[in-house]
Image (cartoon, rainbow, N blue to C red; front, side, top):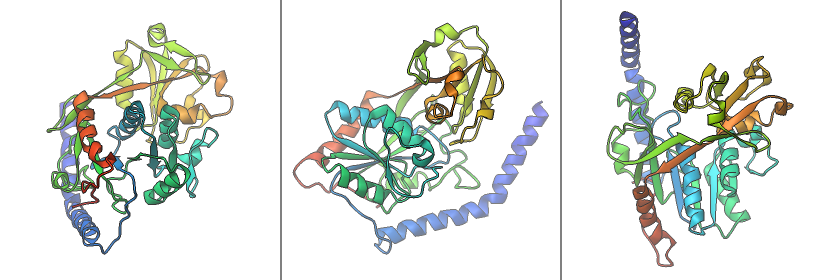
Length: 343
């Protein structure tokens, strides 16, 4: 086994070195694109409200959407009218749209649907986030703050606050895609507009604020009925997840004392079909909230014992203090020069 692991490690290392020239070219293209925006050759658009962009500089999910939801709830608690924009990755529709209760998740994308259901805030989806912001403000002119779910690299949209989210992977090997995990050079990008860094994992790789992620003590059925996880202990359970890191969900379920008879790991943004659920009609099946927005829409799903386990995501209080300090001058009637697109 040790030899096998060594061989896999060596193979991955060799592949990274082979891809290194491509990663270098990627870095040049990223810097060139940033320069074009910085010099105004490529234009960006500013709107009349503060815009908070939540995103990654690494590939894959690190907790952007849970943070976006937490931000909206935090701002709602301060009686602010908040709107959300997203690209809606993986959706089938190509037109701009507002997410509504009856919007098929295949048209809105799973993450915008989840944000809408979790917060009740207006959520607009478009391929270009500038168009989503324009549509949002036209429909809800009293919007005080816009939260952009993902979009650190969407420089056409000028922003006032940038938040970079990292998990336990940190910056990986420090190389750009495809040889590493980075979409942009780091820490170089830290000095070009990033205001806040939030770590969602247990072992932050460098300085920044921290957050906790844990599962709720209950699961929800399609009808909204709650089932305590403690009542599921000792029962055979199938767990499935179509997220960036399915293993993390499975590990959290086991940490709750549940016995996972079977785990089904699917690609992020997976479009579920009945065959994904297997043949165990009587067996309890647990999924994430993100998966549930698609699974619960399947015809006849009420005949299956499918339950979604909510994620409780809690940034440390100091993070919100820092956010409020950045946001306060932007909400003041006095002009502020804090906003930036990329510097």
